[in-house]
Image 1 (tube, one colour):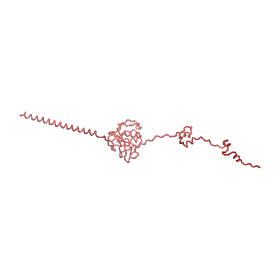
Image 2 (tube, rainbow, N blue to C red):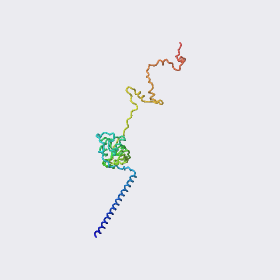
Image 3 (cartoon, rainbow, N blue to C red):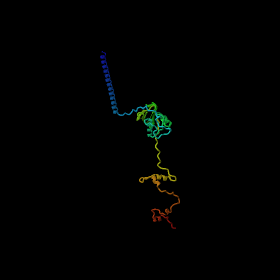
Image 4 (cartoon, rainbow, N blue to C red):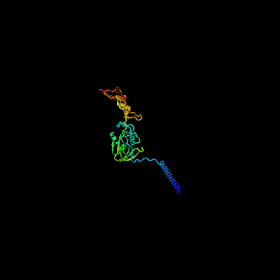
Length: 277
């Protein structure tokens, strides 16, 4: 009697275990199928999506400090010939590069991007805490937490100003991309103002005369005239020198020469008349 009852119980347990196994396998298959479909869908979306530039409305706040990423400089007062910032993905590297392309090689500023303001003042550069048209071709410096900047601040190169807005060229640390945007000025944004490069002085056209040489000769040698269109000044300078006239030195030939147009008869008639007594 007991054996008869035991056999159905064993069969029932085996049937339940098989049922549970089937359910688990179905759940596993469903999960695998779901993951596969999700992976395929994600791949299709990634493959078909066009690359979108990161929004430039705010500054990336994740840029780290620059103190440990710079090249070592013992003399911070000198102006380096090449970019002194080692990490080319950061904003300070791009700002220095853009300033150099515009003809301004900046000193090496220690610290973070926000420290460029104090560094510029220490090096004798002009810094403005307000915006006006004179800040075109200057370096904009964001303080910590201003305009979306992180604790390290931010810097960029100003190329245009309209009212209280300025157009800046910059590099964001994440994902190390260059961009250009319009920014509305607010308190905490300063500008390192740089003087425009002055053209090299031109050499004078006429060189000074050598020692012992007359200025007229030097000028006549330096100026070249066109034979078809002579210069009146050159013609005057090329005339032979005229000896000054001195009284009492009349040439004898001039005294002996007859007056032009007078014949011998005319000369006889020109003689004073004689009165016979």
